[in-house]
Image (cartoon, rainbow, N blue to C red; front, top):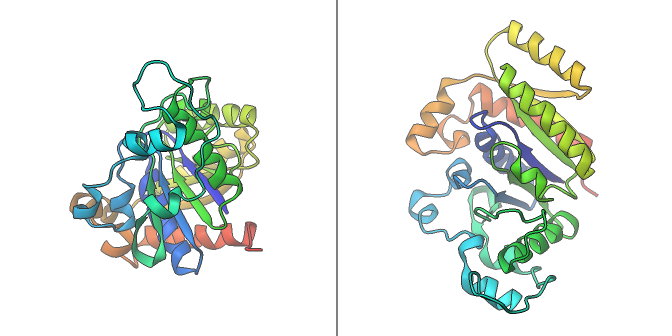
Length: 265
């Protein structure tokens, strides 16, 4: 199961990604969570301690690794670097162990990795994502950066599904519309709408209508819950802060639906 979680900034992608990864781990999946968001907050939503999270070096800033695998140090002038570096051991070596058997890989900011930018950092990033999407024998959940720019880099090619988190707000719906257009161009197999921060039936009707117009399924809905904001302020994973909250229960239902859609071989 290879999933990318996308959407407008502030819609709750990271909380959903972290909670979903933890629940997949509890289900027995070997699960790798990948943070591709420059804010790099996925560690907290997964329940990795702040002491460990604060010391993580994103792969995009690990110049010694990039130089070792590509043959060229980032920022150096000239030089011929490998376009197909060895990456099959990176997740195991550089992944951070988290609760419920999950591992976290922090990519950091990688500019234009699929849009023709020729540099060793992007070469390593492209090779790693390609390997994880095609070859990794585990569940992979990627927390993508807010907005649309990452969709021009090719980082979502190979995913089984892209989960587009949408609030019942017109700006968020418009972002989903643009994501649909770009995902089609990239050949993404499946785009699923996940309604988040739902407060009432009117908001559910709004997203149901929008998903119909977009010709995309409203795959799951998650209610608004102040406990998630409190968890964020406390820097505690939602699944640890409020394990029986409506949001955690709704993400568990999402996890069950995904397992039914993408059963393990």
